[in-house]
Image (cartoon, rainbow, N blue to C red; front, side, top):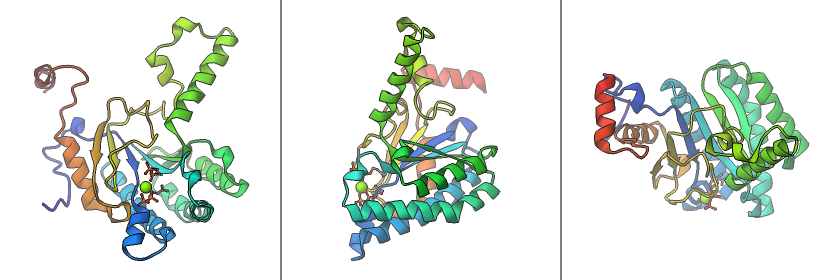
Length: 257
Ligand code: IPE
Ligand code: IPE
Ligand code: MG
């Protein structure tokens, strides 16, 4: 089936994800298949990223969070890590102005202090240039790990307890929600992982508690508008029950119409 656009007449707002998160996987295998170095796969991955961002703007998605570099990716060969760092710098250099023109707000999640000064400067420039933009909220996860995120939240909560600003009994899921990354956004509705692996790889482990999980074998550099729209159409067919029965959800939806 060829999907060229979302069926807007039948697709209610409730069927459209507000917040999409993506594990952009498969760059290395894409390059290997073409007998190219892994770096070539990462460069091709940037092109796919550009298309998906454009598509989110077109489809009026509120937020997009992309996994660009995990806290575990430092374990890769030194040469691959340094070429990825270089690619982040050049990509920020080449893309941020156009994102700004399109009213995109760019933010970063992860431990950025581990990066070179040059990269940190680019990150801060992108953040401050776009901070008043009200269009797509684009979050880039770099040196991010879900376990790190939760540990940071614990540290902040404990320090507030030490200062007497919080009590132990105040700790519950809602409170923790206020201390993890992306707290200011709707919880992720749709998780997309390309590249065939069916795992989370320490991405937003707290935030994904009720997210719809979509896995595809398509390698990230081949994940184009059509594949993205296919994922959106798949999402539109999910019934999100959040613990209720299907009948309860149907009744609530009928009442709302
Ligand atoms: C994802 O593609 C990009 C990053 C992790 C930076 P991979 O580089 O993991 O590609 P595969 O999984 O080896 O094909
Ligand atoms: C996850 O992909 C991280 C990013 C896409 C940035 P990996 O390729 O690093 O995941 P694993 O190691 O195969 O689980
Ligand atoms: Mg991979």
